[in-house]
Length: 312
Image 1: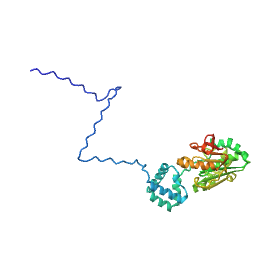
Image 2 (image 1 turned 60 degrees about the horizontal axis):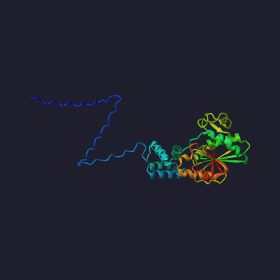
Image 3 (image 1 turned 180 degrees about the vertical axis):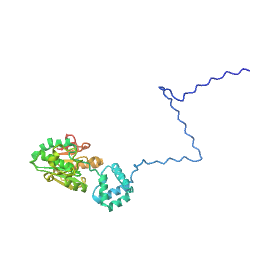
């Protein structure tokens, strides 16, 4: 009996794809049909660690409490940024429940100070963004010198680094013209510190050579205190930029830098409108180097220099 010839075996594909040869795409497995025994349970969504959103009512209630206690309105800031700061701080303090943390703030003024110091923005130093002060020295002040008396507003002055820098530049440029500089901030602690005129070595790290020694006295701790003649040019007041009464056509120059970037667009535009109202005709508005006025023409502004606007 003769056996039929064998069918040749199909060569087995190598387990390892040779170098330089593309691996063929795998055919995805068909989904397994569902059985009637037990319906599949949907997987619970897991919030990312540290990113769970705060309850709207709890967060708003805490912000309203802070506003009642110290007149600082945290709701003016961009909500996501402020929520993140509040959440990080309360978790670090071991009281993530905002209702419970609010009770602590009511009873402990020191905790309130620490909380505000953490969640609000008070970053500054002497001669910050020096190129803008060079424009003030070489362009703006010489042009305004014919007014015989100048008034300048540092809006959102924090602990006074910007205002004292303005004063030093004015004394250098217009030593014979009276200049009054008003600094305002909603944080009473910052206003009190600004009145002292003291700056740490870190605050003075970018000061031009000679300017610091000329207008500030050295301290044993390495810090600096503004000289009396510089302090006499300045006045610091507590005030909310969006609620305080703003005089019309009163200031020759208004500085409001690195403040509105933390606000919502609606709050930012409202604030810029108020600042322009406070300017005298031909006065200048100086904003931060990452900020802009959204509708300068609508507010009657031109922009002769980078991040500096002039009122018509």
